Length: 114
Length: 111
Image (cartoon, each protein chain N blue to C red):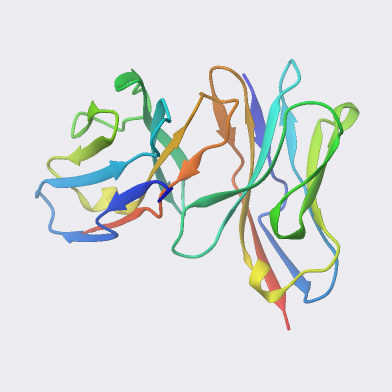
């Protein structure tokens, strides 16, 4: 198994531009999670999906953030328009169950907004 | 609501010395407990987990953790630290609805 695959690994963009982060979860995992990691706030859960359906998006900072999961093997996190305070490492993770089975993390996308 | 506390933000140990990273949790029932490690530039990787049964659990890379219900703790240990163990370590507690992560402990290993 290739694990959770995220792309791109690094993204540098200018303020106001649209950014799209991509994730391919592990096959057979029913849950997909998007996290954001910063020095100041640590690891924050943004949104998670169960069987491609968004279940809890209460962690999404504001309307500029949106996430989709059109099928079981692909998810996107979009920021439009991007702002410098969005600079962080964004992780995608997947698991069999919510809370009771381990999360498998991708290697993250390091986003820098100038 | 469940919560996780890792009291130590940063720990430095000498290579070959023993290690203990602390984790305390708050949860009404028996929780699902996890330790993850994050090396620079990578995502979190599962070290070990506890669901039930033997309270001493073995993980990868020579790590172990002990669940102590009376102390609401799940401390991570390693008898002899290697330079490659330098990383950030996260404790997490889960139930059927949620998984919460601690703030992490950064481990530095001195030669």
